[in-house]
Image 1 (cartoon, one colour):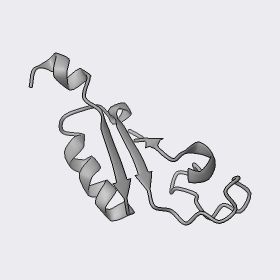
Image 2 (cartoon, helix red, strand yellow):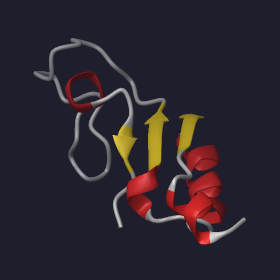
Image 3 (cartoon, one colour):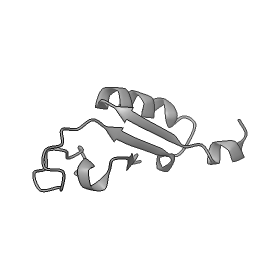
Length: 73
């Protein structure tokens, strides 16, 4: 792939955290973190961001900030 194709590359990952983190590790070899979007299966209870059950490790809430979260650098 040439640089123009790599600049337009986007990855979408859906699944459990171990699988998504493994995929991101490989994907970062080909693109910048801002080109990677993840929907990790976190427990969702209230659906409006009050209970915090769906918090990602960095504090973003899947039910409010998701379902796809941009990969952090």
